[in-house]
Amino acid sequence: MEEVLNQREAIYLLSDSHELDKACELFRISYTHNDWDEANKVADYLHALAESLYHTQLRNTADGKHETLNTKHPLVFYYAYSYLAKSIYYQNKGKYDEARDYIMKYSEMGWFMGLDESGHEEVERFRFLAKANLYTIELLSGKRELLPEYVEFLHANDEELLPGLVGITEAANLNNWNIDDLLNDFARDIEIFEGYEDRGNRVYYVKLVNQLAIYYFKQEQYTVALNYVLVSLQSSGSVETDANFRTLVALFEAYRDLATSSQQEQYQTILLRGLHNEKGFNLANYGLDVS
Image 1 (cartoon, rainbow, N blue to C red):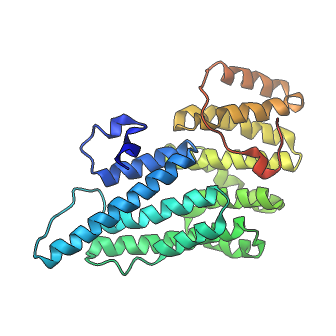
Image 2 (cartoon, rainbow, N blue to C red):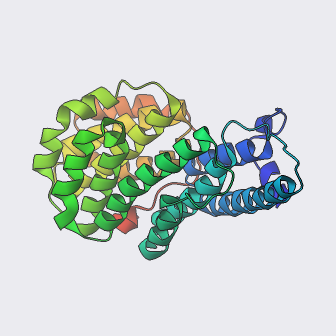
């Protein structure tokens, strides 16, 4: 599947990075652009490559050979990351049982042979990520009874709060929950997220804003919802998320008559930037029809 790495973002192919690192970066790009077919191909490629290198490493060790991979992380990271990538793919396809299966795969990577100190640290890291992501899958599946427990988990692990709120809000949208009290409790944190500048957190922030827009439309709080649509439109180009641009435009147009004059002026200004169209997220999944 070498051709997978030649379909997009050729700049990464020109670097001296290892193919494992290129595959991880390409998955991130596909995830950012909501290109799930590509993301799935890259996840499969990453797993096949990591597995092949792992067996090669075992044979070399048995033969007394010790070769060091020129990668950013220990090999166990890429093996586990391929499972993480597959779980993300299935989660975004709404196939939660399959996503749960892959989460369980990377929740316990202690079987991996040849782990050094950094390798053991990665095993623990993915064990923690699995715990956090399993909460998300269960909530998306409709298990609202886990919400208080998950909120307590997020309070104890601040680094998971932003992606955690993305998952909670999406679960609320999919399952028609009212989470006004929860969003009020985290209102200050959401304001802080807006100021994040690193690429990874900006991507999560835009995903959160998209879900908040959908949530407030469903709650018929149209002014608040339209404000979040405008925030997302403004952020799209700066964090490589113009994939959602046309979908957001359609959403605004569907409720344009309810927008304030200030919101309409801001919207026109954004349109003048002329951001191009990519694949958008599917509003029908959340019960919103803007056709």
